[in-house]
Amino acid sequence: MIQPLSGDVSRSLVLVGRNSVLRPDRELRTALEGPIGPDASAPVGCVTEVKLCRTLRELSQTLQGQAGVAAGLGPLPVPLLRYRQEFLESLHTTVFSVSLVVQARRVLEGIKAQEPHLRGDVAPPTDPSGLDRFVAQLGDCWVRSVQLGGEVQGIFTLYAQSREEAEAMVRSIGLTLPLEGLTLSPELGSQLSRIRRETSVNSSLRVRVLGLSQVPAVGSADELVALTSGFGGLTIDAPVVLSAETRGYEEIPELMTVFQPVVANRQLFCGSGSKQGLLRRKERLLEIANQCSWVEETCRLYGQPPEPALQNQGRQVRADIAAIDERAEAFARSASSTLQVPELPALLQGSPRLVPMIRDGHRLGGEGGEPFAFSDRSRAIQRRRRLWKVGLNAGRLIDRIRLTYRQESDPVGGDGLANEWTEAYGGGGGDDRGMLELDLDNHEQITTLNANTGTGVDQLEVISSDGQRLAGGRPSNGGRASSWRAGRQEVLLGFQGRAKTWLDALQPVIADFQDALRWEPVREEEDP
Image 1 (tube, rainbow, N blue to C red):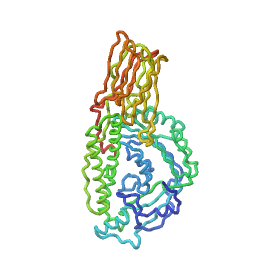
Image 2: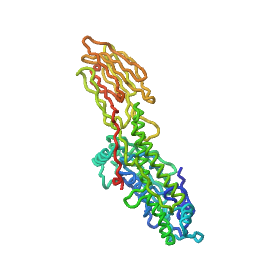
Image 3: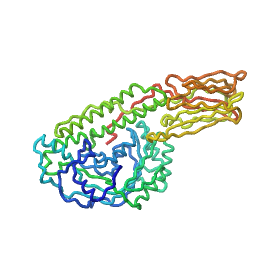
C-alpha cells in the first residue's frame, strides 16, 4: 500500500542514494548534503493528458510525466516510485501492444536539493575497491528532487500480436481520434468505448488513483474521463510522491573522474541515447514472456499441446533474463569492474503469434430459412471464445438449436470474468431434448457430429470429448447421412447455418491449429 507523505517526510527522500541497476527501491545512505527547499520549476497545479503510446518505453515515460530521466540514467520508471513500476507490469504488455493513456496529475509541491556537495565525513574513493564500497553503501545515483500530489491514470491496452496488427490499430484509432493533439473532451469516453468495442484484438482498461483517501470506483471509459476532467477540483488529502529526479554521482566535481567506470556500466544497463540498455532488453524479454504465456495458455484452453518451439522460446527467455540478472548481481558486487553484454538469443527468435486457420466445415441441410452467422470470427481465438452448451428441441426433425458461448472480456483481469451469451435458432416446436454442457476447465469440446439431412436437419447427434451425447429428430425418407469428426489439431468453435420454423442447415466453424505458430521479429530500432 502506498503511504501518504507530508512535505517534511518527503524532504528526507531528497539526497538519499539509490542503485539504478539492482534493488532500485531500496533507500541507501546519503553521501551528500546541502540546503533543501522549494523547487521553483515544479509544475504546481493540475495537468491532464491523453496520449497514444506505441512502445513500453514511451508508455513508461508518459506514466511518469517524463520526470526522473536524467542524463545517463535512462528512461526507466524512477527507482523511488516502485508502485508505478508495479502498475506498469500489471498491464502485461506485449512487444506489439498499443496503449491509450488518459491521465491527470496534480502537483501540490516540489522539493529540490540546492547546491549539493559531499558530506564532510564521506571521502571520495581513490581506487576500484573503494569505489565498489562507495556504490554498495551509497549507490551510484542520488535523488535531486521530488514532487508531491495526486494523480489518476487510465490505460487502455490493445494487445496486438504482430507489427501489422499494431499498425492497423493505430490507423483504426486515427479514424476516431486525432493521433496528434489528443485532448480531454466530453466525447472522449464514448470514443474510447467505441475503439475498445470495434478493435480486432483483445483490450483491457486499468485505472489507478493516488492522492485521495477515498478512491472513487472507475469501471468505464466515461467514468475515467469524468474523474480525470474533474481531478483538478478535488482535495488531495493523501498526497504521495509523484515523481523524482535522480542524478549520477559523477555530477559532483570530486567524484567526476573516479566514477567513470560506474557510468560505463550504468549505460550498459540503462542505455545511452538511442541505444537500448540491458534493463530495457529485459523488459522486452518480459513482454515476449507475456506473449509466450498467452499463446501457450490459449493452446491448452483449446486442448491443443503447445508447439515445442514455443516451449523452447519460453525456456530461452528465462535463461536470457537470468543472464541479465547475473550481470546486475555482478554490478552489485563490483560496480567498477568491466561488464560484458550477454548473448540474448530469445530476442533474435522474436515474439510468438497464434494464427490458427478458421474455416467452415461441410454444411448439413438445405437452403431454406434465414441465415445465422458465427459472429466476429476474426477475434474468436484472441478472445478465447468457446462453445459451452448445446441444446436441442426436436420432434420428427430438429426444430431449434440453442448455443451458449463463453469468451474472455479482459485478458489480464485476474478475476476470470468472462462474457457469456446464448443464441437460439429455429421455431417453437418440438420437445426439449436437454442440454449438453462442456466442462471448459477440463478442455472438453465437441468432437463428433452425426446428421441426417434433406431439405432441413432431420436428425442430429452431438458427441463431446468426454462421451456426452445429445440427439434429436429422426431420419427422413431420402435423407442423407453425414458426419464430422474433429481432426487431431481441429477445434469446433461454434456454428453457422440457416433456420426459421425449424433448423434448415447447420455448418460447423472450425479452428485448425496445425502450423498455427508464427514468429514476429523484435527490432531494436522500433523502440528508440
